[in-house]
Image (cartoon, rainbow, N blue to C red; front, side, top):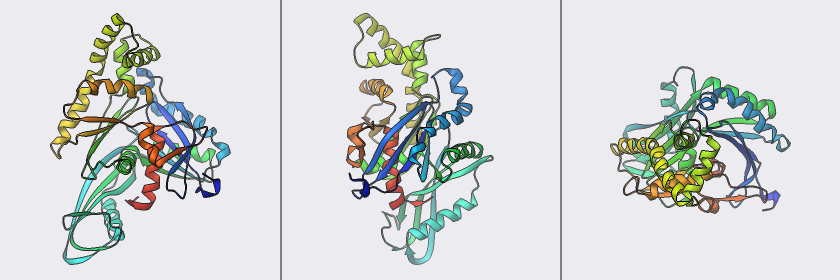
Length: 371
């Protein structure tokens, strides 16, 4: 792609519980996100101690990461927060007019803003997003590409908030490195849902993001987010349980990868199988509880998009291959899935989170109503 065809580059920063990742993203006239080289800085070593130290580790990790992009001088920095750095929820709004009236994207934006103003964030928190994920007029979903006439309006609104202190610290650190850049904040459940909806034909699905210390679950039903949950077990917790007390996290992660690929000798493989079943049990239980809770509100989707870092993704799939949740088809999010809407520089490597975020931001600016 010729450089003149690319729009202004944006730095995307993804903040999780294992890594802080960043990469330059631009979108060309072909409406495909183009990813440059990305960088990752560890947030956690996977130990219980580092898990508790995440808030204090974040600022220096972010500084190290941002310094790697000083030559890029981005004009925009978009920060994507995963749990536990944010809290998100879904709210359904209903409005009925005495007679049919024109309903447009401006009508929806005004309604969302009015309701948002009526519900302040939690103490010591600030609003991050209030975005409409589904608009229903007179009982029919609509994309509102143009104004329609209706009497009954229903909106599914995705709302998120985060610690005011945390966002202030992040913004200050980024402005120290990029003083002229505009910094905005977003959250991963919305980004993943919008991107996967664009990448697949599925209208009902689950998104399970198993990060280092947390797992986020998003349930989408008929093109709208209907349920959001998190539980404090990630792949580091599974690795700690797999290795046992005193075991090296690095060794446990390596052995898990060998086990998942069938590269252990017979005796060792048999022992690893038992260790894996015990180690994954709590994570499996957490996911089953989320599914049970979600199924009380909507039919549980049969497609589950599984997101994680490259190596954990391999051994998480083992649990699903053994029929962990009956009737669920698991689709790991891999480079081949995002390829239709993402291209990479010659020196760039695939990153699931940056790829989904790149797709999301392109769609976000064109189609979503809210902020």
